[in-house]
Structures are given as structure tokens and as C-alpha cells.
Length: 165
Image (tube, rainbow, N blue to C red; front, side, top):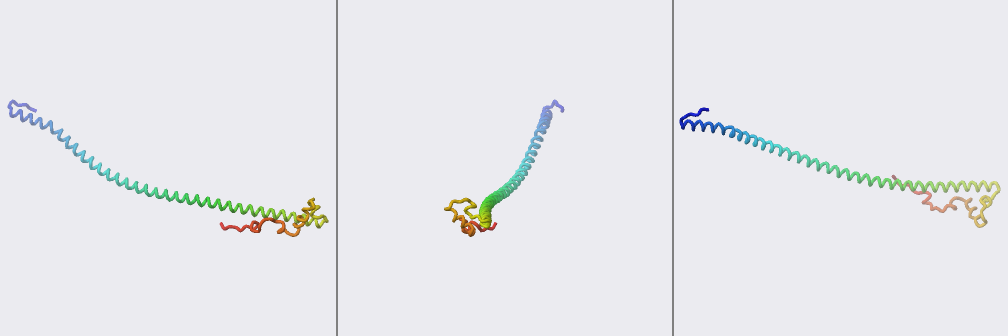
């Protein structure tokens, strides 16, 4: 850079020097403006991508929520079915216990009759066999005539119908 003695020239040189000193700032502003425009474009692209991703996530959430509701309904159904099956199993077990009790009573009665028949065959009467008082001898003798006279259970309790499973 040269400084001349002529005033016109000095102004020109100073003006040229002034342009040279402003040119980097002008270039920096243009570069900054370009980078801002590029950032805006990238922000728009990112925003579009984020909206698309948000829609996908929203649809997945709705789908998973529906699947969860279906699973909860199925679990509720299975729980109710299990409770019904346990109740039915309890009923079957109760009927089984009742049948076993009827069978046990029938077996005891059968053995009692067998013993009484054996005692009658050996010459002993039923009263001597059980050492019963005279007032009870006649009722004990009735057992020899058949189990239907000695049982107090109604017929439906002896042979309970089975429920289908």
C-alpha cells in the first residue's frame, strides 16, 4: 500500500484500503447467511423427519395399546374360566366324597350282615352277638332282611348323577 502526496490519490488509496478492510466482513456475512440458510433447510428436513417418526410412534402406540387391551381381556377370560373349572372340580370332588361315603356305608352294612349271617349259622342270635338291650333287638334283626331297610339316605344321594365335564 502506497500513500501518495496527491490528495486525490490518497483518497483513492484510502478508499481502496477501506474497501479491502470491509471485504472480509462482507464475505463473512455472506458465509454466515449461507450457513443460516443451510441450517434452515436442515431444520425443515429434520422437522419433517420428526413428524413422520412421531406419526409412526403414535400408530405403534395405538397398535400396542390395542394388543394390551386384547391381552387383558384374554387374561380376564382365562381367569374366569379357571375359576369355573375349579368350582366344577370342587363339585366333582364333593360328589366323589359322597359316593365314597355311600360305598363305605354300604360296605360296612354288608360286613355287618355277613357277620350276622355267620352268627345265625353258628347258633348265635343277633342280640347275643352285639349284646344289645331287648328294646333294640327287633331293629337289629331287621338288618338281616336287606340293606334298603337300614339305610336312611335317599336314593338320589346313594347314586348321584354325574355332570358332564
